[in-house]
Structure formats: C-alpha cells, structure tokens
Amino acid sequence: MQKNKKERMKKIRSRTDQIQIDLDYLIILGADVRGYMPCEALRWRLDTAVDYLRRHEQTNVVVSGGQGADEEITEASCMANYLMHMGIAKERIWMEERATSTWENISFSYALLEEPRDTYRIGIVTNGFHIPRSLAVAKKIGTYEVYGIAAPMDDTMKKIIYSIREIFALLSYKLQGKI
Image (tube, rainbow, N blue to C red):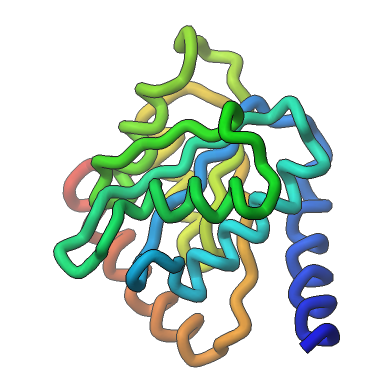
C-alpha cells in the first residue's frame, strides 16, 4: 500500500513540477461523485491540486461542479471537503456549484474571481485527455494567462476510452462555437 502511495505521488509531482510559476488560482474541473466520495479521475485531479497548493500557499482554488441526478452532493462540495481533509485551508477554497459541462465549469469559475482583470495566471486542473478542450474553452471565454495541469491516471483502458470520447467532445464544442 505504501509503495502505491509513493508511486502515485511521484506521478503527481512530475506533473506539478512542470508549472514553474506562481499561479493566482487553480480551477479544478469536476467529475463523478459516488456517494460522498470522488471517482478515481477526480481523486487524481484533487491530489494533483493538493500537491501544487501545498507548495504555493498564495494560490487560491476554485472547485467547480454541480450535482448530477445520481450524486448525493455537488462535485464542488465533494472537492472542497477532500481538499480541507488534506489540509488546504477553507479560506483558500471557492466553490462553484452549478456547472454541468466544461464550458460552464470555466465560465462560472471565472465569474467568481475577485476583481476580474486580464492579468490572472490560472491553472486548469483536469486529467490529461481533457486538457486541450479545457484550455481552448478557457482561452475562448477570457483573456487570462491559463496553464493546463494534467492529473495522471493509472487505468490505461479508461484513458483510451476517455480520449476517444474527448475527440467527439472537441468536435462538438468546435461546431457549437465554444472553442
């Protein structure tokens, strides 16, 4: 068990080490909540964010995600609880609890930022397969300096399935003018 945890943190650290600047905000994009617990993909996102936030104490975080019909609580609430359990101060966590899509995650999260301005440096935390669409949406909606922080995943089959699904999501967003 301890070896798995070390390997997991090694993968996460390799991703967060790529961001060498201090960001003003992280935005963690929601994913399925099972009961009151994050699904595996969301847990990877959260652990990646925790690693960054522990090393960058001036960075605040927006947790973004509404509540699906089969979810007990909002994705944002689940994420906030997880982050606080991992030692991130409640004052650093901002909750966006309405979003049901990537477009809404980013749009609604941008609306929460204090004193909207063009100079924010924002890290979008999601899984690697989701980074291209997330960054395209972020750049379409605002003029902030945005960076993708790709949370790793262990399950190769899920990565393949999600990557294929993401191709269709990118095409759909392009046809809708969202990217």
